[in-house]
Image 1 (cartoon, rainbow, N blue to C red):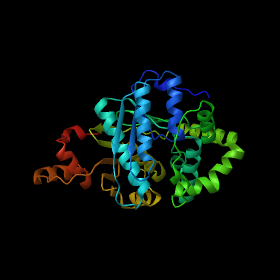
Image 2 (image 1 turned 90 degrees about the horizontal axis):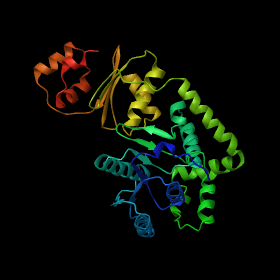
Image 3 (image 1 turned 90 degrees about the vertical axis):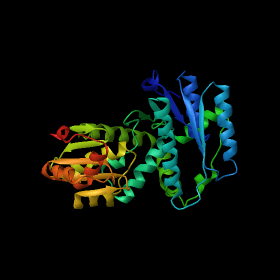
Image 4 (image 1 turned 135 degrees about the vertical axis):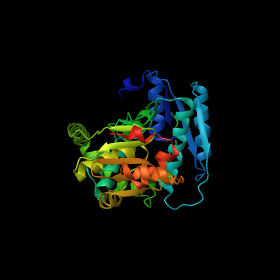
Length: 326
């Protein structure tokens, strides 16, 4: 199994590990290629074997000289468990990246995952950016996420593990169709992929190239701390793509309803975290703040036409208004 790890050959890397088929195969593939990395795992304590998976991760780290970071959590509410677990997991990873100065987070998403995502987004109503949301490299503020398995099927990863008699675990919850991803996997994506693997891989490549050709990687014309200001392109479709890209870097994926609401309201707070405002000339994006402002500051912001939902963040972060001259 040949994979290109050039991107992470010289960087400080953290592998998101679970002891399942995908991440275990990736662990050994990275070891074989002499890629430097440490591992991080979250134990949600919802399955009997989760403690065994954690112990296996600790054993592998010791055996191969890797640093290991693990987090024990207990999610009391089972409502939207998958999203809650994902939020906890990525918050933990980002804390580690920040504290230990990792340059990349390596994840074991593979071709089946990418097709599942595509079909799930297609069923909701999505644009090109959402349909191919799984890319090999995803740039974040201070690091990048690297997904080297996106052209590799899960079956091939399992065959690799069996060939070398590497131990791995199978999460039985992956067969429970109450989870949307499992429903799509068992009823659509796995069957489709088994028959049309080559064509699917090529289609994802073409779509990725098309996205690059459309030049949708818009850059902020001004960025101060977590405040970003973009040019209003006066095209709703392109503007929402700019907003999509900014929020994705902040760990937020917009639903169709949220995208429609942003374009309709022009000023909105997303996920109780990020304020967005679309003015005549600019798109403003910043974390939401409830900081009390002085009357003088509010008046200066009004004169400079700074959106109301952005002002408190600027005030809280002591950003000079003179620096916002665009």
